[in-house]
Length: 208
Image (tube, rainbow, N blue to C red; front, top):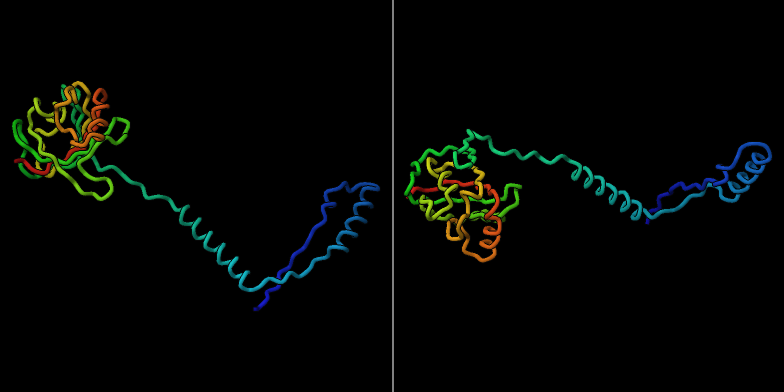
């Protein structure tokens, strides 16, 4: 095994003593004594150990440079227009569709994400992990869906996407209003926030 020499030296702690009068002479004598007893020596390190040490530290440096790299900024899509309705619903037009337009009384197929006004996730028809979607069919009738969402969907064109803040007065005023998830847990979570403003991001897929 090849040996790589490495210099190692030991410095006297007495160098921190006072440098005046007898203290200086005592300091010089003690320093000379210590240096005489502990002179620099050659420490023999196996080549494999030395290289592993260097390689390990280079990996750490590489990892630090990766983690120190700035994260790419994620920007929200540009908003085409903003609307405020008499009911208090605020709408942001994110994507303007080019297909058929939805009217009151129509059946529509949509994907949506529902969040609290602070951004906390509540429910979605799109799986957050694998991206698979389970669109829902909604009648544009305020006796069957929440009034605020009906107002958001009316006038949208297929392929369009809107983001809306829906106040509780035109939200889940009844547990029977759609859209409500069928699973107990998500349903309970959604209805537990019925008395606060909710943000819906909705995409119109079809007018049936």
